[in-house]
Each structure stands twice: as structure tokens, then as C-alpha cells.
Length: 361
Image (cartoon, rainbow, N blue to C red):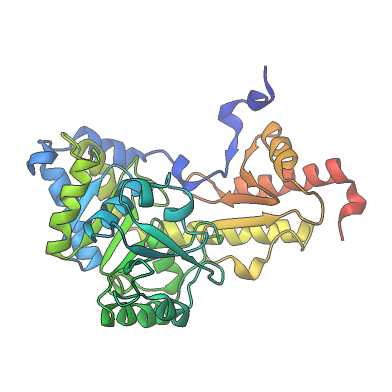
């Protein structure tokens, strides 16, 4: 038996991501009863229902169901005609750091990273970075891409006034704004608004169906009719032409009927988790920075590398992600309060075992 499987899968507490959730019984029932057709030809009634629902939620003219968020983002960059131009991104943005370089390799765009504060770009920095066609030494800015919530920054949320300052500045320069809203409903719950109020500050938006919403896979890309014609072409080129996709659209419809309560619950559990870790060692986590369902812990004071701690947690049945000196916990629908408390207790045991109780401040 290897260390990776020292704990039976049935007893593991999985905090790696909210992508590990499984469909609910209601979702599985919806799968069994889904009406099907050829989605690529526009004939799948369940996919059509999902896309119409997404239009109502986002306030956009058209919406498209695609297999993944990376495809949604890439389709948007292509549809916004970014080839040979700059795309302004926050320096730790997912589209820039975690989508295989498709922004440049496939869409032919040039990322222009700006440093944000907890993942949120400053509106004045964006304005100063917008480049027209006069400076022939620089590629023109073709798109501003925002991320809300911001994954790498710990699920942080861009306030509405920030979005409201960036969008008109970009519009004045004739540049569209795309919103990477993989966890858009988490942002909406934090801001206490429906997602439509956030989407109003972007020309195109995508949100994931397989994270906090708990669907098995997929994402929604939405925008105005002209943009979406180009986006549908781009998605088809990228392999997004699905057939009887109602099988996976049906559970998404179930999730979108009342999406906000599940996210409020997940946020409460993230704060419970962060508070528990802070009681172990207040230097590990800034509880005040926890806005949504992601808890980033930093072990700089204890170790130069989080990997041994991540392995020790895995051996004890708690699955997390680690990178550098950061350990990330993500709460989701299949992590109950008891699991949160057990994870905190296990984390405390790992810290005491590896570094000694005297290591605590």
C-alpha cells in the first residue's frame, strides 16, 4: 500500500476543490428523465432550457453551454478578436496561469499582467494600461479580463464599485471586458446581489457549473447576440459541439433553480474552518480575508515547503492542495460541519507531530 492510499477513500475528507462534488439524488433523477436531442444542431431541449435560464440569470442576450471553463474563456478571447493584441489580466489570473497558455498559443493574444490587490485590479492601473493603435511599438489592447471570485488570491471578491469603474473606462476606449466568473455565485453571495448585477459590468461572462453548484461538468458563456455568434463558432472549433448533452445539462438546471443558499452554507463552513486553524496558529490564516469558500493557509513560519504537511494530512485522510508555502482548503456541498471540525483537529495533530507543540505561538 502506498502513502497515497493509506487512508480508505470512503473515509477521506476532500478539501482539494469544489470540483470534487458528486451530483445529488435530485440531479441524478433529472439525468434519468432528461429530454434529449442533438445539442450541436440546437435540437436538445434540455440544453436549450439551460441556456435560456442562464440568459435570465446573467441578463445577457444569449448563452452557450460548453464542456469546460477553460473552453469558455478561450472561446471568449477568440470571439473578442484578440489575435495580435493585448489582454489585460491580473498577474495571478487563472486564464493566464492555469489554462495551458491557450490565451497565446490558440487565441494568438498577448497577456499584459497587472498586479492586483488580493486579485482585484485597480481601475486607474487598468486605465493607464489601455493601449490604442497610436503606439506602433506596442500591441493594441483588445480585451480586459477580470476574475471574480479570484481563485489564486483565495476566493477574493471584486466589489461592484471596482467593476463599475473599470467597465466604462474600457468601453470609452472601445475595449470589451470579459469576466471569468468560474465561482460567480460565490461572488454574488458575498456581495449579497444576484449574479445579474455583477454581469452588468462585463460584456461577456462565464460561470462554472461543476464547482460550488455541484453539477458534473460544464460551463456557461454569455454575452450579446453578436459576440455569441462568434463565441459559438469558436467553441465549435475547439471541440465544443456536443450531442445529447442534456444528460449533463439537466443536473445544472437543478443546481440553478436556487443556487444561493448552498454557497452561503459553504462560505460559513470556510469561515468555521479558518477560525479553527487560526486557533491552532494565528499566523497560518488571515480569517478576515476569508470571503467565500476558499481558505489559504501559509506555513512560512514553520516550513519552506508545504508539501510534507500536505502529505501528512493525506496520510491522515484530509486531502488538500499545496503549492510553495501555501495550503489551500476549499469547502463545498459534500463537506459537512463535522468534516470541517475533523480537518481542523487533524491539522493541529500534524503541526504538533511535525514541529512540536512548542512551535505554536
